[in-house]
Amino acid sequence: MKEDENKFDEILRGKYSSKNFPFDEENWEKLEGEIDVARRREKIRKASLIFLIGLFAGIAVMIPFVNHDYGNKNKLAPEGN
Image (tube, rainbow, N blue to C red):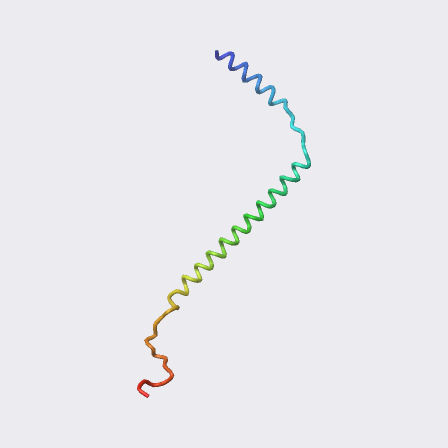
């Protein structure tokens, strides 16, 4: 049984190790185009993430200053007139 498995493995290794795949320039060009598109998308994602983090950080910093009640200390006209 073990001997049969070894023969089978040797046959497979022999067939696949001697197999040469032809180089196809057209397929390589298509793959390069797809890789370029993937890289552009990744750059856009990174830039968007950085922009959103900055936007949320800016909003978080501004929240304490918005809707702050100053107790109406800055009135232009005195009360009671």
